[in-house]
Amino acid sequence: MRLNKSLPWWVLIFSCLFNLLFAAFFFYWMIRQRFDHLPFAPPQVAVIPLTQAKANVIKALWELDFEKLSSFLKDDRHVEDGYCIRDFALALMVHRHFFAIKRALSSPDRRITKIKLNKSEVMVLFDKLSDEAFFQMEQFLAKERAPYTTQGLFIKMQEDSSYATPFMQSEEFLAVYTLFRRENPGITPHEVCEFFKERDWEAFKKGYDFLAETGDFSQEAYGEIVKEFQMKRTGIDQLRLSREKEHRTNSPSKIHVIGEGETLWMIARRYKVSLDDLIRKNHLQSTVIRPGQSLKIPSYKSVIWEESRDHPDAKAHTS
Image (cartoon, rainbow, N blue to C red):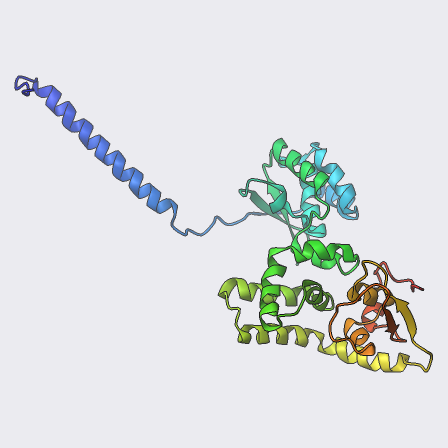
């Protein structure tokens, strides 16, 4: 097919302009794609003052437990500045009760504002959450037995051992357990979990943060992390040894017959003795026990239990 050489001049000009516009749009699109992935710093989070209206709502909700606070997630009565009662209830669930909002909401994009409660304490408010978002949280709470962050699970398992299982399924625990297992091939998740129970969250988090940042699972890393845990425990260990020495008597040890489904760490918690002392008392080579086996229980209580005033096992158990 031969080109028509008699095309009007304005058609040629229009064709050139169209090609230029197309090329400009193409380059704009390419540049935008590249700049969208640049690591720009996130916008600074606004900090709003604690007005009287906000303070009144926070004060009314402050002492409520987790379950009661969750019942206010339906309360859309307006308070101030576009915030409803449900916004403050959610903020307190996260701030005081470690609600795992990241697991509850499918969308990771959440705008936040900080509200200053006092000179040292700041609480996060989640902005512009839709009715659908609050519905998702209600659904999550209805089906999730342990709707807490890893820190929340760590704290709660000090009071209720049933929270040890979801804690051991967390990303943070699995990373640290992997490190411990490399250096101690026979160690079980329950043993590592028991090791952490007698330590604080900050020591555990410091170990996990180190692994997450460096990816270092070497013997040296293990030594540094365990050293940090031991430093956190030095004072308590010294107190435990001195107090346990005072508590020892000439009375015969209790005998516990192991029941079906019982583990060594469960028995230690029941009688408020340390796992290490229970193992030494019975000359055990591992934590593997069997139903019907008899265990001698040390005749003193560990200081760890005596200092846990809020522990649900505050009253002595008898067998």
